[in-house]
Image (cartoon, rainbow, N blue to C red; front, side):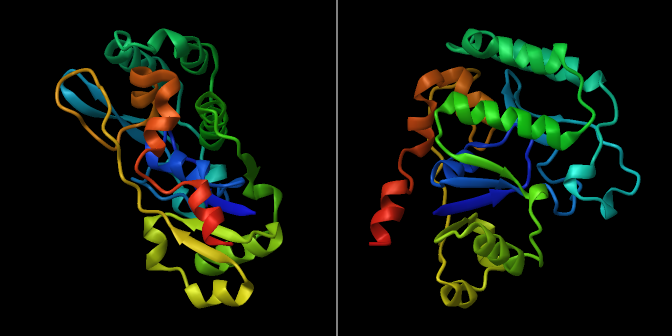
Amino acid sequence: MILTAHQPVYLPWLGLFHKIALADVFVSFNQVQYLPKDWNNRNRIKTSAGETMLTVPVLGQGHRDKAISEIEIKDSFWQKKHWKTIRLNYQKTPYFKNYESFFEDVYVKKEWTSLTKLNEYMLKWFRDTLGINVKLLDAGDYDFTGEKNDLVLDMCRQLEATTYIFGTLGRDYADVESFDRAGVNIIFQDYNHPHYAQLHGDFISHLSIIDLLFNCGDKSLEILMSGNLTREDIISSRI
């Protein structure tokens, strides 16, 4: 079984969905410590003036001692602001109308107090819309122990994973020998960002997945996987 995991991210970039698409199971690591100025509550989109950051305001008091799952959203004013910004800058893209109702529901009709619930709700929709066949699990439903390398290794053991996919930064802390001893093959993702048609001038990479979806629609998964490692590559390497 191919496993990967990541903290819940607001409007994730393409690379996360590549990593998810390689796996059989994806674990939302919502029990790890919240890190300010990370991507848990913000991401970038493209506007007529270039890129801009959309940030979900969170309650800051005591956040350094809280898990991501405990982080609360500060207010609801941001929702209409984010929706207005998204609609203004993407309403002329080829596929905006295809997905408009979902985002209107998220930003206008619903009200969010939990950052994790917002991110995981949207992640499930992104998974289904992209057509990625992966099982999503919540780390809070398990008793994974340890930190960094040991935490990932314990998760692999409990879920009986045969392969684990690290992001690029996993090289900074992964103990390859400990995974070898446990019989778990590990892979470090090196994502090659594709180019695709965008509005508003020169191409900008490393934006939220919504930029790809609004511009490319049902071709989005094929585009984000192009020129990168595939599940077939992983499976054949284990034979």
